[in-house]
View 1 (cartoon, helix red, strand yellow):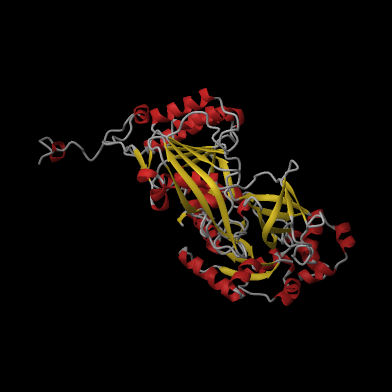
View 2 (cartoon, each protein chain N blue to C red):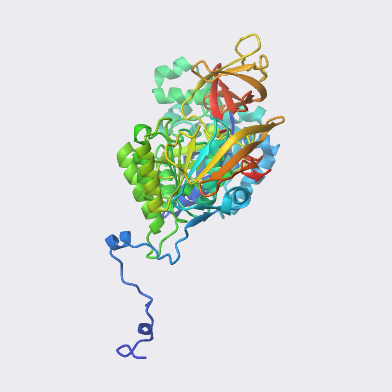
Length: 359
Length: 227
């Protein structure tokens, strides 16, 4: 189970009359994006992020927590409770206790938690009467017996107790993402340049009027604006949205462990474009399980039977991303053809895809 | 200074409390530019490569390059300076913009409008954008009717917009003020792609001669640099 850091600001859990709690939480999440791009807000004041990627960059868990502390101070927030443990449920429980649970102890930690921390009160009372007082005791009940007596929700909670599931149902506030999006939308445009009369500048008015005309001609996706998103590969970082849509926060230039650096391809196909890469014998080149190429690539076909000789290649740079959700195993390869065209290729799901053209 | 008497404030044309301006009027009013700049200044490498060191408003620049030989980079890099200085840019017909590379080139994405796949309506989309932007990067389809091209060039001249056309060859059917041709490209590659040297031929309509230059695009930071 993925090792997670849970950060809990008790005082941001309840909204204040001026709506500042959500705003402060939103600012904190944005700032936290520079430590880890995969911050997952669970409820107001509570978020988790995986320890592994930042730890790879900062070496130790303590170093990651130190950076976290700096970010909290920079946001002028009171010290949060912080917990580190395996899985979302245990991480939150660890945060309530301000504990860093070593990986090998995480299982035991979860089992010792009182049953009320996992189970709704009414069911917890029944379980207590049955002599089950801890999460571990509940986990030891056979799944079939639980399913006979209790609802599907309790069966799901049993999975959490047994460590099969990371997150307990009900741990997450489904409306939070929308509230946060609205929040960042509301505060957007603070740095918008205002014209002489306090309205938008005339230049911007003209540009936006032109954009509307194109949009009425081509449809919603006709005119796009771009922003630099977070991510490891250049094709992940393209955020192209209709020009009047709210823009995501600009955390795209934050440091990123293992990012493919500049120069990056100036064209990155938005729809996956399969390509063929073969070795001297004409056999497909693939990335082995150890992250190396099966053979030196010799020829490339970018569709339409147009073959080019490969004169140089670098990589593959393998990565497994979002390993706590759906694991994505990918590798990137830079190649140069005999016509001095440079391409970025991506190996994924046993195929090669054109990830970028250095035009 | 009594309330009913002559107030100090009225001596000045700008009183501190301005009356609200009707919105329909605001839309029509533009800031008064006394000497509207007729050129867009270039800095660094491009100021040495492009004759005069400026892009003339209303002019059309044709960037010719084989596919994947730096045409898109040259065009966007030429537009980057104006974009960074606060002008609006439109990018029409570049299907899959690589955002990270564009940021490296120096474009300010807050003021760039992308029309990635206008398909048959590329000329109309470009004409629409000419009304609102200061610089337009355009990658048209292979076959262009000269009437369309001429109409766009004329409109750009009226509007004072710099149009930068990216094409594989001289397929732009009307004369242009400046032609920038990538004649060769050479990558410097070590353990990864490092930088690329582009040999560029620049010719303008006013001057009979053309000049050759080597520019580094992209350099290891993804920008343009002097060789």
